[in-house]
Length: 495
Image (spheres, rainbow, N blue to C red):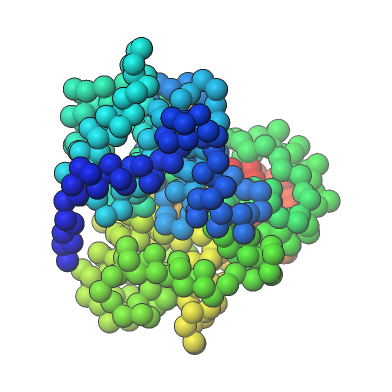
């Protein structure tokens, strides 16, 4: 259903900007331009469940020079993008080299394209006092701009033809809309000298979870996915061999709570993620994936994906089980991917290329999503640890690949599964990656939640690739061409 927004008058836009940028008035009156941060509802709410985690995704904007950079920040709802933006604003307002009136925060919910166009004019006029001696660059932060259809084309024209092209621009959104040609309109030639143009804010990795949890465990540096079996990696693993059981306990904890900051905080403080927060996550998915369906729609879909995660998804029988047409399920799956709730794992050949006309596996991006059905719906099955581990290792590998090749996650060009000559599946087949020495292939990975008897599972890797790593529960063996590495230690090797 198309939703129409009433156009805002200029006086309404001015008032919205004044309300959203209280540091302007403080700076004009010579008062503390950061005092607002102690009263802002989002930041006050954060204080009630803060465990010391702060996403570094915009740290360079907060502390670096004001240039013509453009950054597109995406990620699931409820992950803290708005908080990251507000924390960046607070850091900018505290700097001596920036007038707080250079910082323009624009919450975009409820706005249409005409409103956005007027915001660019009105906001610059409202802050014109800082340009009395010379033009000063602005730092624009547009929150949830992807709710406005056509925004990227508007920004293309403004970046090409106005002073907006000299400013720092940060935009955030919770859905990646392929109808917006963001790459053509903005990334190509209109993002200044910025190299990390597309960024994602995802749930905490296992490393980040360890950083805020009660586990006092070493966190070895992550390496290149092609160097997971290097001599340096072997030495690092052997040095930590006496902590295998401790990592195992921490991993099981992480598998039960995931990495959404609010969930981690509730788990640390109360020992359990609240039903209220799970319902908040359900509401996000209902809004973005299936707004017209019944209340049980999302738990049923999540359960179907969680129980099938380790195999390519057979769409037709899954649609029948859910009481949907194939087209309706395809639409929901596409929305799950666009909303950063699901990561597709397609089949790839021995060179890392996509195999056409094959089905993909569908990994839930965070373990908590797999637990939601059994927490919210009577009779739903809890997820299996084997499936949770495979999905989480796959997501960690995809994050490592995204760091090496900006934009590969959005393009669906990160991970993939392989097949042997006798049609056995390899969970995560090698893919091509950049390195200082040119293009290299990642190490093949398998995931089996075992604490003994792993070599039989490892023979598939030996026969196909001659090497590889089997992610286990608590077995560490790096003596042969195929290694057994506990899943938590492998996750730390990736990101």
